[in-house]
Image 1 (cartoon, helix red, strand yellow):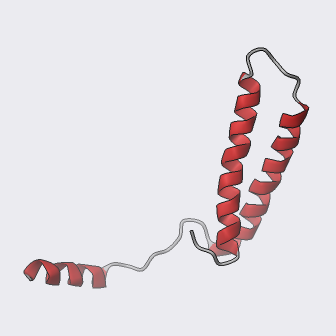
Image 2 (image 1 turned 45 degrees about the vertical axis):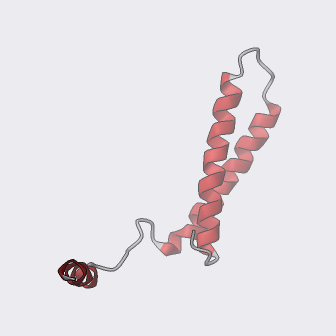
Length: 82
């Protein structure tokens, strides 16, 4: 029971959560990330095919990462905190 009390006191004294990125910047961040995703997707679709698709994989991977973070930022913007 002493452990529970110690954890309870510790929990009560912890500071509240503060996000690393201000909530007011989330719409702009989401727009920039998703716009970059669409630009890279267009660039990916116009690349000539190579025998070793290193450039294609790099562009597609970067677009995928930007899309993932952009969608999460957009969800957080509209109030769906994931």
